[in-house]
Image (cartoon, rainbow, N blue to C red; front, side):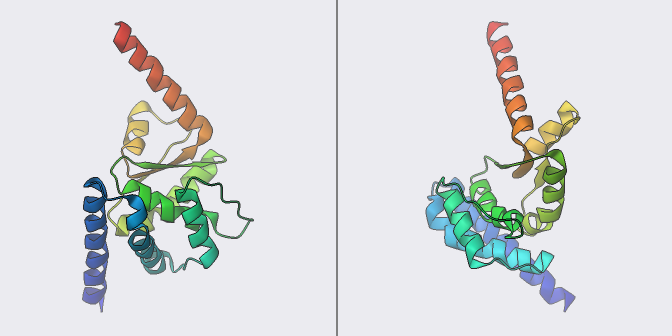
Length: 168
């Protein structure tokens, strides 16, 4: 039984690697969406015992298309976000999710980490008070959770450093 679970987990991981290769080779993410969402759904079911509902798939698609998806409390925003996060992280450039506060960033990253890890992706969280080395490590992950405030200030710090290097 354990051996079968391990083989099935390896199959999911291999499918994820295949999608990464296709994304990095230039295949449009829109074409990868059905397979990517299916992998995330299966991973969430296996790791968390949670199943995506139709409204969550629709929310994920809306986000992928650049729309705003409003969801009520309890409709599963955290689980919904795993869909577009995974798809957009396939390209190798990382995907970021902005939450309302540091607590939610850390909570959601920890909660959803098993879903992404089963698919071979790393997850980090940015919060106030992190050392520069810990921030770099979180940004190097495939999926990074944080607040808009932290992401914004990190962007400004990076721009200021780049400007100093150019002038230096």
